[in-house]
Image (cartoon, rainbow, N blue to C red; front, side, top):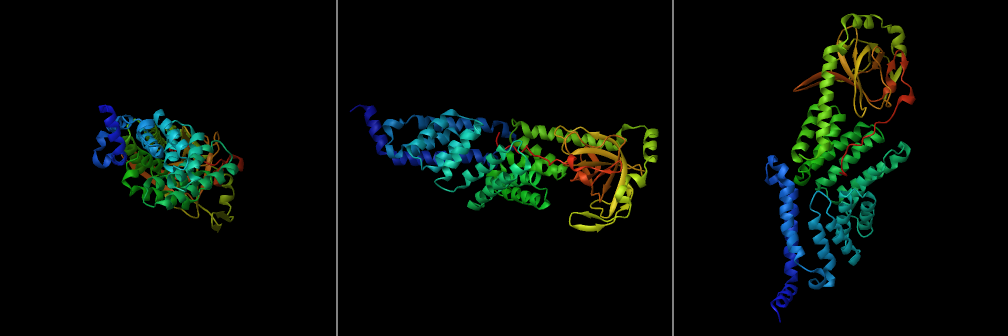
Length: 448
């Protein structure tokens, strides 16, 4: 018997120990990747992928040194190929070798749920959403498990595209239910909590802008924070930044985008969002400070020409109005400088538009308003149909304005948020229903 044959016989005899050792090393490889920032400073973020790849290749050599067909018994081949495929798949980018191994593993053992899920992850990395969905659904046929559930939640939201609200609403709600079921499988899994937070964020903007939904979103992100694996993922910080931006907590949103950039310096979306938000805040600060750069004479003429009786319309007539759950509200006209920070129930302001801010995604439509107090304030309007909005010189009445002050490093201004443009009066006329368009959020980058 040759030395090679002796080595082969010895390998077969020690196979259980070898499989156990490979399993442990694979577990350590994923632990090294997932908890990288628990053991390394953020300054090493740009080296993370390279460090993981180096460790991956060392383990790959051990897997590839074993001939599956001749050295692994048939009963263990599916498990071995799954482990080998999972080793290839530790990279953030698609590795076709992983798909090959995992596809073979499933053919050998269609009941191997972990292999179905890993194959689905491969397809997602390759942006093959259709095959990824089939893989996760294949896993669920054999076992309800959190990984399949949360990935299908992501895919359902990805498939919505440009559907009408009536078509997309049941899909979004199903996405939320799948994410909730994933969390219920293991309430300590921060990745599942992150996916649930993203699902709630999508529901908030595309189903109904219920503040309770946004509260559930933030609560889910808070739960994710307790898991060191989730806390090391840039997605969590990025998506929370998106939520904070729409809550108009701008300083915190910038911090989230900044941290996402530090966790993954090569990932473009957080850098784009951070830059866009910083530009918006600088533009808002300048617009308010300069009052739209309009000359004093023009400003004076604009303000003096405001006809309160006509331009306040129903809001100035002493009529009763309904605002959400509040009924029979009578509004009192006040100047902008008389507003308090926070809600100003029972009040209405009227001013002229002195400028607006160009926003790439048109959300929110933002303009600056000034009245006889000469105080200027930004008005951020959500759900205003693209191409609509107030023009310079328009007289705008805002009922029950909620005033917020924004101060953070290089920006400082006050703003009023309007979720429903149909509450506004523009030149004495109420904004029509045809100008309402639900805000659509497409920036939760769960599928890169």
